[in-house]
Length: 215
Ligand SMILES: Nc1ncnc2c1ncn2[C@@H]1O[C@H](COP(=O)(O)OP(=O)(O)O)[C@@H](O)[C@H]1O
Ligand SMILES: [Mg+2]
Image 1 (cartoon, protein in one colour):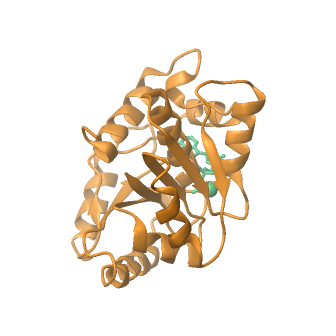
Image 2 (image 1 turned 90 degrees about the vertical axis):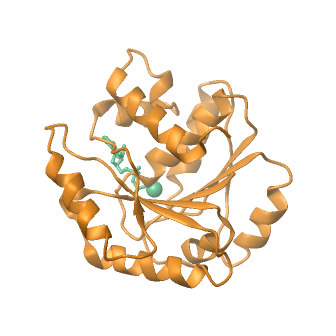
């Protein structure tokens, strides 16, 4: 499956989600490629740390910029079972062009910095991409939500999304947990981190199921 974790805002947890899903996919025995399209290169840095620490399974990661991305992704899709694209926090050519080739796009949003403009833009980008990629599914993931349980955050976001015909809401939300930062630093998924954070593990496992289903 070819998926995008993208959006126009930085710091919403895109790289965290992309790297966790990539490692979990590799742990499930899949041939997975992570494509880092953000000039900041955090996904690539994560994969490098994983290699440096000798963690297995290895997660293949390449950096790719510019308009040639869709063609490159199509070529690589014959060599990998899964491709996960991490697209940086701005309206970039990489974000736009990824939307043309992916089956599913996930857009993490932080409830605290909730930004209607961002969603409006994303809704329009998905609309445009449907001209070339009519079956694309795009979902917003509430990310880095406070661990202080507040139902309102997701309910309010859910209501707001009614206005955007091209965007659905993921069933699970990701909370702000120190385990995600610790895992990232060592090139790990939270499922590999010791000591275990069962809540973070359960969030990522549920997200994994929602993204990949039974595939
Ligand atoms: N769910 C989370 N809980 C705690 N920290 C998080 C979470 N998601 C991301 N972070 C931290 O927030 C910062 C930005 O996250 P990152 O995934 O790099 O965002 P983006 O790729 O959208 O810019 C990083 O320091 C990361 O470790
Ligand atoms: Mg990032």
